[in-house]
Length: 575
Image (cartoon, rainbow, N blue to C red; front, side):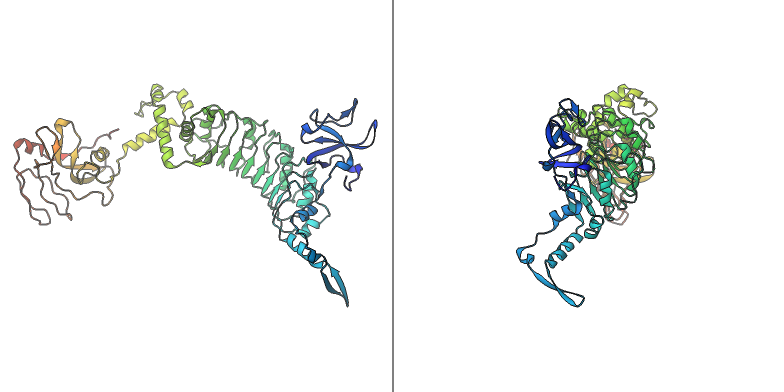
């Protein structure tokens, strides 16, 4: 046993052969003479009983095999914070420095010192420290008052996880001397927190990240201590058997990340108590047994007012098995990233690609899924597959392309709340003219991509005229060749219409288009002038710029009739 008296050991944290425990008893245990310490192990499998011996209860344990009696000389009560820092970060003096002498003048008398340079070196090393890790270093408290502030004034990040701190007051004694502290990890310290009186404030003026995993803290204690964290941004509360019992009032208002993983007592109703934290951007709910969620303030196709800033949600290792859970997430107005691995809905027996595509299609604003970015191509494909997979079901439920006849029943809308909006956006896109992409394969110059482009152009209601050579898709018996004039819905981009030229192809006796002498030939066109109107075979003329005309080949009367000018009237776009 260290220099700690047995009178104040109750409640202290101790270490025995690498195992941590809490002292609950100190005294005699008959019939064996001598002093014994009764401890409750953090690992209940390490103990032998529940705190009783031969019918006498000396202390109580939460687990029937969590207690033991140990001799005091086998227990390590730990060391102070500054001693632990020096043990880990101060370099040992070399043999040459140990005996180095130096003369220092004090007053009028020279004083011989040994090891003076070593002290200066140690102090210099400690004052430069900004990040330290004292994990599993048996730290039990602050040590001498004011010593930390004097030796390590610039520390900003401290890892004190898995040590021998036993109370929140011991943490405050350390933090009081670290005014620049921004990150503090206290995980795996079984701490006792203030229960009645408010916690001390002003201790963490710069603290932004606080980790309290496996500390045994309750939600009420979190809210009581949170008044001392005025600028806190990240709070980790994993594995504390938390039960959210009340809404934060005037505390935790600056928190951007909240980790509630592995707290099995939390359900969806408790989550509503933290739903209005104004700056909460990341919420981690892994392994809490969550199976459903519903935002009662938002109907189908509407956004909820809850979690207004939430951008990243983690629900891994839960019991999510219904697509209704994913449907509800589309109501979160700011959600951009989701992790939902290892759930029944996304289990190993599911097709990973299909499940991922459905999640993408159901949550419209999602940009990252399971830490993988969603490129625009993947989203388009997922939404298209989604519309195809449930298209027949949508029609059977009353869905229709005509908005006046589109009346799917409520059951379908509840199962697929985003399907309607996807269909409407598809219909709207189909009504718009396609952009020209240049001549397509098999199309003549000036056709703006061939007949596929025409099907988008002819649906126009605006007056932007285009003249070019091409062919209009009609029934085989009515197929024509020559110059057409189409009215597009929007002005064409500059340079999208190529210089027209005669088709140079004629219909053969079999009715197919091929090479040879053309049935209709147009005069040459100057690139700087608009295309001339179609002339019947046999006519001559000159282009507007004065170029020489070209003679047309003789043609039969039937060919002349087919060479009439074709005007494409506006109509509904092809689907």
